[in-house]
Image 1 (spheres, one colour):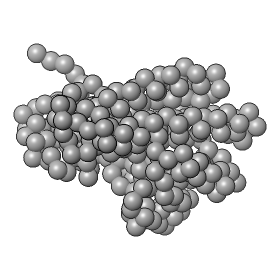
Image 2 (tube, helix red, strand yellow):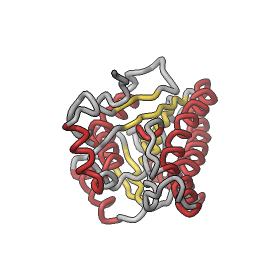
Image 3 (cartoon, one colour):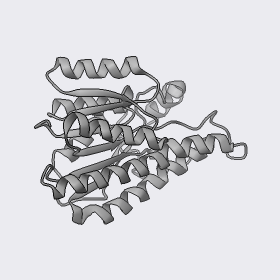
Image 4 (tube, helix red, strand yellow):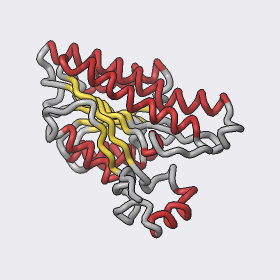
Length: 258
């Protein structure tokens, strides 16, 4: 068992997930670096953390799979002896970005499995492990952080399944926050705006134009590190009297103006 607090970060081989894993490691967490298809990238994250004096392990797993979710938690408990934080970050965009009138069931099933069903049941399983560990005095409390998107409320008619899954993640956060507060498990949603990543690379020209036009007050691309610092603030207990809260990391995009 490690003296370090332990975190599971899904989709941590690149982008926002990688930045979160690296930030938590810098803050002394042992980290399970989950990946789905890029073992090389995940190992690069782990090697960087270990080289800096941290602890990390890469674990392949599709969060939409029951067996893979169980494997993630088993690895954290087996390797580190505890589980303090779950960051539900893994997600995929709408397949083919089809118009709402042409959207397919195949894309719906894949996106909802990865972006909603998987995170919900992983959070459920993690919460039950955290309850056991808290009652046994192994960990003082637990935190579950769900990474959603401005697409939870900003409509994209060519990504209906993605938007709806992210919107549902907000309700999932509040449901878990209500149920788990008395168990000393606190649940938060972090809602990124337009962040430089593999997911936004295909539409970079569009977002460059929106930034130039002032579509959000802070006129720059968001960085994965911006989201990671919000997560770090939450796990750092800067909000001890909060749960169920949504933190916008979007350059002010959520502000309505006329």
